[in-house]
Image 1 (tube, rainbow, N blue to C red):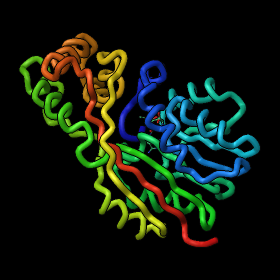
Image 2 (image 1 turned 90 degrees about the horizontal axis):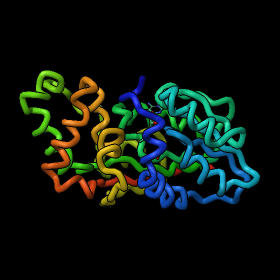
Image 3 (image 1 turned 45 degrees about the horizontal axis):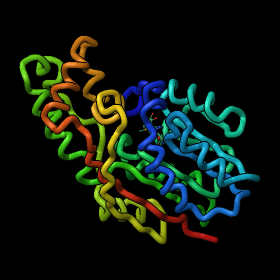
Length: 252
Ligand SMILES: C[S@@+](CC[C@H](N)C(=O)[O-])C[C@H]1O[C@@H](n2cnc3c(N)ncnc32)[C@H](O)[C@@H]1O
C-alpha cells in the first residue's frame, strides 16, 4: 500500500471540496478532445469524470494504488475509462499518453524525483503534466492542533512516534526535480485554498486526519476528531495550501 489506507466510500461522500479544487486544475490542460490522458491517483473517479467531459473522442486511463478507490472509481466511471490498480512509482503503460493529470496525490508519494521520472517515461514527447497536491505550509494550523491532541494521555500510546506519511514540497525544489527528470516549460506555484467542509467531523476523520486516525482503535476515533475540532473552532475552515505544477516533456 502506498502512503496510507483510504475509506473510499467516505471519501466519495465527503470529497466534494477536493473535486472542486481539481476542477480548476483540469481546466489548465490544453486539450482538443481526442487525446489520451492519464489520471494519476484517481481516487473514486470523480476527477476522472471531469476529464472525460473534456475528451469526447479521447481516452482516459485512471490509476490508483488503493484497491477500494479503484473499485469505486470503476463503479463511478463504468466503461468510459480504463481504471486499474498501480503504484505510480512503478507505473508502466502499453503506449505513452498525451497528458498526465494528477490532483491531491503527489504529496502521498515521498520520492518526487522517482515519481517525476516515471511520469515522464509514460508521456509522449511534448506531453503535458498538469498537477496539484498539498504544498509547503499545507494544513499547518490543523496539523499543529492534531499533533497537540496526539500528545494527550488518551491518544499518546497510539500516536507516539507517528510520522506524517506525506511530503508538502515547495515550488523551487519541485521545479528543479522536474527539470532533472526531463521536463521543460515548468511552472510551479503555491495557492492557498481554504475549504469549508459540509461535515467537518467526517471530513477530518477521512481526509485531513485520516492518516492519524487509522492508527487509533475505533473507540478513540470520534474522541480524537472531536478534541481537534474543539481546539480549532470546529474545523470549519481547513487551511489548505496547494502546490500547482504545469510542465511539458521536451520534444514536439
Ligand atoms: C486524496 S486522494 C485524491 C483522489 C482524486 N485525485 C481527487 O482529487 O479527489 C489521493 C489518492 O492518491 C492515491 N495514491 C497515493 N499514493 C499513490 C501511489 N504511489 N500510486 C498511486 N496512487 C496513489 C491514493 O490511493 C488516493 O486515492
